[in-house]
Image (cartoon, rainbow, N blue to C red; front, side):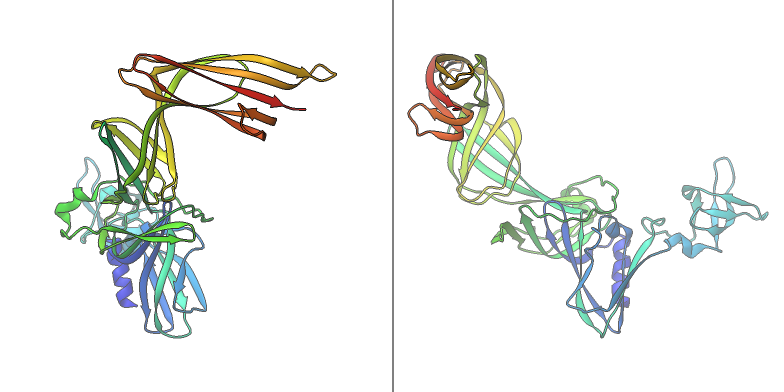
Length: 428
């Protein structure tokens, strides 16, 4: 137990805390080995660990206990109550004072007068720890017997996210990914084993808000840490709908940091660019510009994340992609393409009405005219969602409630193209 307390206090002072991490997109399960030599085990964690902890998730795995009591211990400054510290106020000489209460920094001077000091005006004979004013939380377990186990808890302070880069050119496209592991706490972790999970995992508890960290990349701390071989990220397959990955080697996750590692380099089994429009059917005439769309398939399952698209090495947009199974199609838009315009004209071909004069079956002819000012041919694709009790699109089988009308056309360079389709809306 003494060794555990020493390690925990060392972590509070900035030394990495040894742990295994199971990192999810919005939280992390921290697993730290513990050993009890008697029937009482006291775990001391710094405030940085408790701040992001999700209530109701602390557990002692592999070591049975009969009760657990959590309490807040005084901060470091409380150990100096009744002792001499030094007060230096602007325009005044430094004077020795007695610290009466650490809670509100009440001190007494040599004349016996009481005053409230500011922490930054105090100096000490010994070096104060980091976050000297933060209280320390302890958790005391009562055990049937001695033994070893794992202290486990969930924290919002450590998360991860993939980010992709799609590099496209006239010769094709390549997709690569990085994994950002973020530590938003003042607690560093000496990580022995790391697993990354991607997918939809919901936890109910909300943590006490922790201070927002000024993130910095691990590379910025290279001069402060021992250089070791960077771990690689290996796929571990699927776990009940989650994507699971593991780091190949231990690593240090510094406090208030972002560690970035190479992630995936999937092979694209399909890639297309096109100018597109997704809209709902209306009997009104409309016009506008199409949007810049991309369509791709990869030979690996892809966790959801931010994707940056570069054409000929230049940034052309960013968006997010969802969780995607191996070989599934991904489509996304990067905004309007002013060089590809459309004009949509709707003609009512026929209309049948009931005895009350309300239309019950109407046939429309929708005509799209596309114009491009690009110096190369471009694919234009339009999808319209049509609603009604019974819908017929061109000669396709009738659909109930909703149907999709789709147009695909190659627009020549600096040219135009026209395509039409018919819609029968039957509400009888």
